[in-house]
Image 1 (cartoon, rainbow, N blue to C red):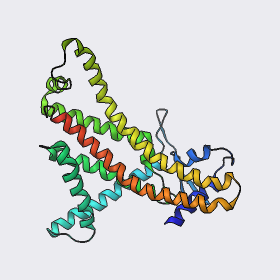
Image 2: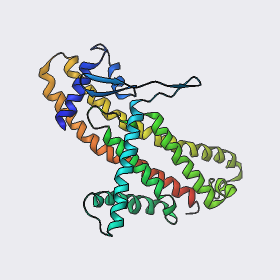
Image 3: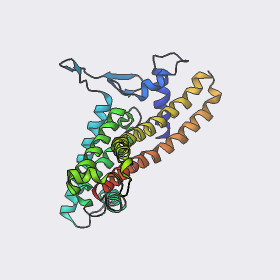
Image 4: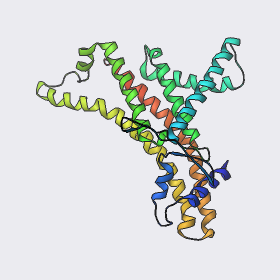
Length: 280
């Protein structure tokens, strides 16, 4: 796998239409596009569509989002069937059960508390969707859709809606927004605190979106930048150091892929718990 990763980056570098001294090619390969790479020399362009003047073309990030969704459906349908056959499933079902129980027992239950079961399906879906997307992006000639700000913003918006709906459902519409202001605040500070707390509602999902986007984008940029040192310096003598450091960053990317799925889910669960149980 390590050699495949290096081959991918080197091939993309040679494949680039940008000049050697132009760093724009790095973002060109990290960002979304209307093509799929199948080999160093094969690029297939995707069809483009417009609806009422709006570009709704299928991009490579969309393709890999569909792939992640299909993989999730296939994996967890298989896990569910294995539980119907036996109360003690074996094989891959045990592997996925570890992650499911981790989200339930280490994320949802401690941070939300009573009534966590209501929000567990969303948290599991968000966790595995991000996890699958992160690891698909580590495969050579693939794309990381979690490095797309539109994707992370949509996920953060969904968390925002779940937070608000959960808080309003548990505390009532007026009770929820009243509970946003801390108890015992002097009357003259109420207008300021109301504005601060209202802004806080929107800064939480903003932080979720930016954190996931930035972390998943940064690793890929660093890998491309390290490999590009070979071509910038025009010397293959630098390749052992460049490739070695790139492989080290790639190893860290595996950890980041797991960590970012956990952080997004944990923070979403924490914000849900704060909204649902305002008195605690």
